[in-house]
Image 1 (cartoon, each protein chain N blue to C red):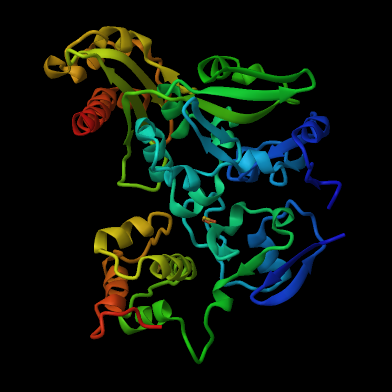
Image 2 (cartoon, rainbow over the protein chains, first blue to last red):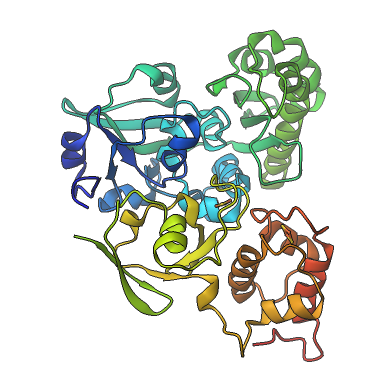
Length: 282
Length: 158
Ligand code: FES
Ligand code: FES
């Protein structure tokens, strides 16, 4: 048991236990499928389950701190942070109830070959930062920077928590599925919108997942909508005109072109949801 | 050293590779074949069991993560004389076809109805998101579930 499944009691101990012959174990929903991906299955599991701080969510005026082991199920139950709706929706609609009880936010971010993560675009839209720990100590960086370096990050680094700064806007998440539920999204979109006093968009963050191999912010669309009055925005036309920002991936679930085709609709759906929330909160 | 847990109320120990999935341990070592080995990916729900009362997919749970937990399988939630109410409703409504998906369905629904005794049809469907049936059209399954709270007393049968 000690040999092939370890339970380090602290993040420092977990970092020391890592290496090429070990793999981090959080919720298990990605690691346990390594055989199906023809990956090396002889690695020792380094479970983070016995490190208490990784299970915590704390909310205060400065922000929301989410431990890496917090499950989708737990995130879906957060009800006191109105601007975080995109994350709550993404967590509550992804996969299926049993998987949501197991799969963690840290795993969703760190599974680098998993293109269809739901939490990642939501966190991008919320401007999240992540904290990582390695032999060099702890460091924080934006999730956007983390994702850009994800494939080359050291195997002895652990993502320990996520930090979301508090905001005054509202957010929403939309998923494009072939069936109604229970599968990976063909594409997903999270938006965060903040109005100014005149009813125009003061700040917008828009993130897209499942279209490329890694979720990313749609900066060109953010720039195009910023300063625009909410009322006269034809968001799906704007999105349509900027889809060349993506190099979509082909997959067994959907061809590349289809992912792009549904994108403008998903953006419009998420915008409508976030704008509705803004109206209701006004 | 093995992994110790409670399985359907009895203390059990597993001495094999702790990375083995609970599903395989249940079926191969404990001879409990109610949880079905279908997709192995967390999509179909045929392998659902409870860990400390919470439904999880046993195909994605390594035994090493279960030290000290209480595991309940379909074999542990009723018996031949007294079926669990969901099982009984499935028989009454003649719901089962090949039966592959049903252990998981019963586990999911039994847990769900505990917290949501009077669900709508749409809510039952949402609860069954992770339980795929290749044979039925689902509607009869929902009919059976609805019967549990549409009974004369309006209560869930227990
Ligand atoms: S076999 Fe576990 S979910 Fe399908
Ligand atoms: S009855 Fe055959 S899979 Fe559901």
